[in-house]
Image 1 (cartoon, rainbow, N blue to C red):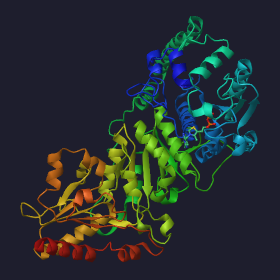
Image 2 (image 1 turned 180 degrees about the vertical axis):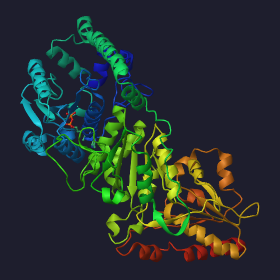
Image 3 (image 1 turned 90 degrees about the vertical axis):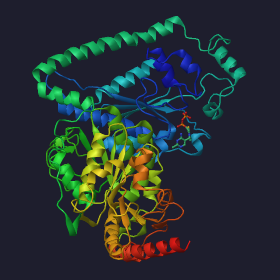
Image 4 (image 1 turned 120 degrees about the vertical axis):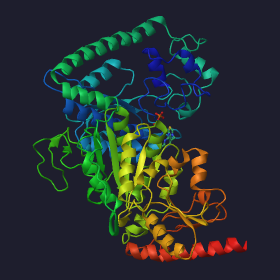
Length: 618
Ligand SMILES: Cc1ncc(C[n+]2csc(CCOP(=O)(O)OP(=O)(O)O)c2C)c(N)n1
């Protein structure tokens, strides 16, 4: 409500009428602000701690873009990132991880005001949260100030100015406030947090604050006029910036063209012209994470707004941007450290070292995407996508262009054992509306998966990649990998009008159905193979296409995926079979596990023969 009120008062297109419709069906003022719904809502907030992380992403974006584009006399990119944070934001782990990284990165233009009101939704913080936050943030490397009166505007103003002067530490301004301020009976109680004060108490509060008790939504002319000065100020600032930019364009035509492109989310011509094509390789093959590395190498330098990193897993996720530099504050002090990238040490670095902080990584890349001008990515093992799930959900809800690179995508990971082996992860990510999950079958599908991920501007995309090698298919024998754009496509077919059997698979398991088909063909069984890298993309296709891939008349269908079976019945139907894994894995070499748990050509053939027999008898 504070945000909505300020947007209205400062002249955003959010009429008072909308505020009266707070939390109502169809209003622009939902219970938690949603990005894109009303102007001025920069990020969707609600799950505590996420916003704190998003702000760190925005501050990184500002530091990065200013390092890249500002020139002497042209402070083109030059803004602070402000946020109001609450007890909950400071309690949540994602907030702590994000604050730790912000301090480490010395993000001096990040300023948070901590609404220190000693009350949460259900309790006094005396019951739950008594650590010394000032000391904690100092230890993170933040500049801190403590104020004891949330209504002392001069003191707050002064503190913000102090924060501006502090250029190489983020600032936390801890301000003692009172929840339900002015309410004679509810101030400083948790009841004031979640439920309305009630008619009588509102009246008493207004009286107490010297406000006419019977008027609602009253905005004195004088107050409105004061706030609306923001419009003149904004217009002036915009004009000043536009003038500066006109001069900059003349002096730096290439840079300004690049900046325009980044801000407008456009890709440079031929950005993908050097994409590799992988020659067929039936034997050794290549892991899709390794193929992904080669693909990334082929285009990342052309996409200057591509920025990101992994949660301490670069040697495994293979997502370092080579020669992309290391995003950091200190140019000289660091030197050649283990794990660092070539290409320099400063805020122009495109490799962000998130450390072992998946939660923060998820929230920060959302902030980077929301800021505009960048295509952020974050990488980790698929199993640890769980640590990012709340942020992934928000990226999907907001339609942010964020790319996740999740490698080590099945029990094929091997010896690390069940804690590291994803089982239900594909199903759980697919269940999330708005997220596109792509699990490519081979190196060339991985090419198309990356192309899709970079080009789709209005949604997050998760690339699910193998640790282990998979064959590279001969696309003269099998259908083109561009079928990936339709989510599922016929990779190979039977000669009859309708096949007797459909084998469908994703990722590493596609190679198994390709082999199984060869044996089944020898037994005169007409088999169709379907590679199904993305359920979401398939669901976008018209019904005719879907029926052409999965003809309703063909009921003998088997899915093969080294993950939970949940959801596959939609495509295999009640007459079909699912080769999947609905229990945790084990520690052993990946190939042993895949064999032990039924991901073999022989097992698929047995299942197929049994299924066909059953159908014949049934
Ligand atoms: C991740 C998450 N967990 C739980 C909630 C439910 N919730 C909403 S507000 C709140 C407590 C808020 O306390 P505080 O952060 O101090 O905010 P204030 O009371 O000052 O408004 C909780 C637990 C939430 N929004 N997000």
